[in-house]
Amino acid sequence: MNSSLTAFLQRAEILLTRLEPLLPAAPVVIDWQQCLAARWQREGRQGGLQPLKVSLDMGLDDLIGVDRQRDQLARNTRQFLQGLPANHALLWGARGTGKSSLVRALLAEYASAGLRLIEIERDHLADLPRVVEQLQGLDQYFLLFCDDLSFEDGEGDYRVLKSVLDGSLERAPDNVLLYATSNRRHLLPEKERDNLDSRMVDGELHPSEAIEDKIALSDRFGLWLSFYPFTQTHFLAVVRHWIEVHATRAGLTWQWSEALEKEAIRWALGRGNRNGRCAYQFARDWVGLRLLEQQPG
Image 1 (tube, one colour):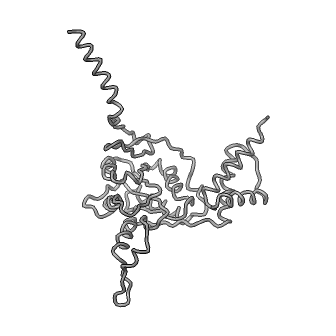
Image 2: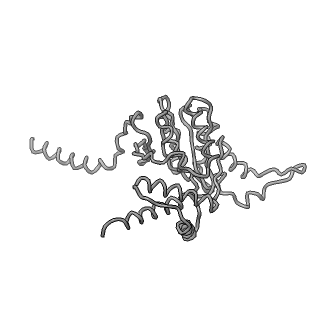
Image 3: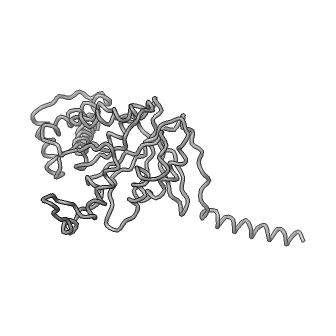
């Protein structure tokens, strides 16, 4: 009898060992007093919030040349944190111009006031109602952040997003806002064929239903902020700022010069773009090289 029981327990243990990786992970209980950010993770049909370790080394003052966008989004966020009416925000425009950095800089600025950030991927937008349900009633204020948001023809997740933003019978709680970034103003591809069904009525142009449906999604965002490609002057100002930041942290003595300016311009030409991301990368490369040259051997 004992040998049969031992064999059964051994087989059961082997079976559990094989099944355990297939089971969803136990939900993580997040202490929002200590945790500043989390990411929604999908595991099969289940999902949950996973805490993130975030760096708060980029502040609002580090965003050069986007003063209007920075001030408007910061003001909207302060309204949100004070329990006043505030809008969901769509940051759209050229790549690398500071859209995502601006949202993350808000966390550094207002974490002490109770702001928290939750990242959710575009492919997981169907889970938005479940995410919002977990945040309702908490003391903190949560920005749901969807980076690089866009949809292709035939995808239905954008209708879930429309319902969460506005149009559902169950309104999102007052401690939740959605901030999204995109390279597309209306988030959906705008094809020439969509305009073929537009018509003139009494001398006025009436857009087709396809166009109206696509615009209806971006209309759910009460605050639109546009970001444009950098001029050369803007680009060089950002380069200079980030060199100053990295050099100061490393104790490096440096001086702005015409040769350094030309080097930064060549870097941008080689990358084929002139934006904040390119300026940041050049500054890191330039400061890192100067520090490497100072090392013995």
